[in-house]
Length: 302
Length: 158
Ligand SMILES: Cc1cc2nc3c(=O)[nH]c(=O)nc-3n(C[C@H](O)[C@H](O)[C@H](O)COP(=O)(O)OP(=O)(O)OC[C@H]3O[C@@H](n4cnc5c(N)ncnc54)[C@H](O)[C@@H]3O)c2cc1C
Ligand code: FES
Ligand code: FES
Image 1 (tube, protein in one colour):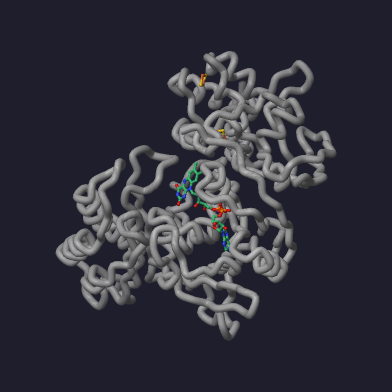
Image 2 (cartoon, helix red, strand yellow):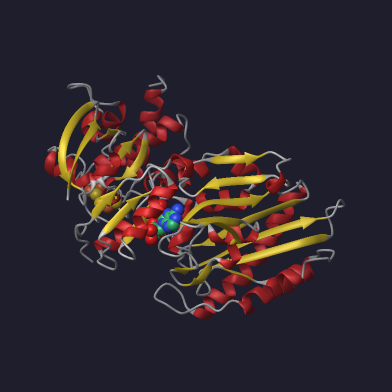
């Protein structure tokens, strides 16, 4: 397909979140926020959307940071990782903290797009675009992340689980900004991983993707908590509680893992499209879920 | 809608008055005449438009020129010093990593950013680093060889 030049728009450069929201409010419904632009500019070139106003978030320093939270603060007592929405995929990939302590997210950015896209694309943009195959969603769901959303009257923090409504649809209003993502800290008996199936080894969207997070007991044999999230196999990224229940509270063995994987393969509801059939996707969910649980156990027990 | 901006490209500051909907690759090629940077897919997939922004590789077809204001932009024209080619450029010539040449500027810029971060790569790491750059001609092997040779040269080992 021949990709055209961008349509015209008016460009705004606010320097604070509050100012950005005010500008979007003034142009009710006809303004779009731009972060990295890798989804938005493409959609505009294809004339899928033609906003009259673009409000750039790139001049807002308070949105581009990555902080490891210390223990002790009342609202953030458990510690964790706070990621500003404008943090780029390249920044996440270069972060030792992400690689070491939030491995499922690192696994995801490592297989996203290419270097020349990762230096532009932001984690906030990936979530707000809300495509079913968004790679940062399953690891964040599996790590039980929450997000902060700001609008003209205040802010709210919601579990990421309550953010996605459908393909390209979220609970975010058009005058609201996703400001940051909060991932709770994982202790030494916890761990996880993200596996993505593609047609080539890079630069492809997921055919199927699975993220797993497990918390084991002190003996590292019994599973205390399990979270499994799937990408590209439902209208939104999803958790599969039925499969998680096969693991939580149990001593994990081969049979348990096989059973959980089978349930994950049955609980997903993918579509058939030009890239893969429904049946193939369901089988691959089963295969990848099994592998992801095994790899997670290896990581924790190592 | 036009804006006054200052773009810093290959160390030179350009004061421009440009339409806000123009992408960086359009301004580099059409306004500044820096046609070394190519535009092909125009959608982030092929890598021919790769430039460095603050030393990081970026698809300049997905960047608004106005958003590149205040950043350090390096294009393929910024690598050679006078008539002396950059070691990567020399290695591409020597290893015949160029056939039609259309992918070459983007390949070289992606490789430059990569070697700056990882001066002693393996072949597998090089392949991964250039996975966002398509080449229809060479089959990639010569390109990987050239990047490998350039890394040795840049380390002073060749
Ligand atoms: C070649 C190519 C390869 C790609 N590969 C992958 C891949 O492997 N995996 C993958 O998941 N994606 C991939 N993508 C999609 C895209 O790069 C990512 O989704 C990216 O993270 C989007 O972030 P952005 O900052 O560029 O978003 P933008 O394009 O700037 O914004 C996307 C949308 O979110 C809104 N938005 C952005 N930030 C905020 C915020 N803080 N608050 C409120 N609204 C906001 C914008 O208004 C817009 O509607 C690819 C894209 C390209 C072009
Ligand atoms: S022209 Fe920019 S990536 Fe193809
Ligand atoms: S040399 Fe022709 S596309 Fe690479």
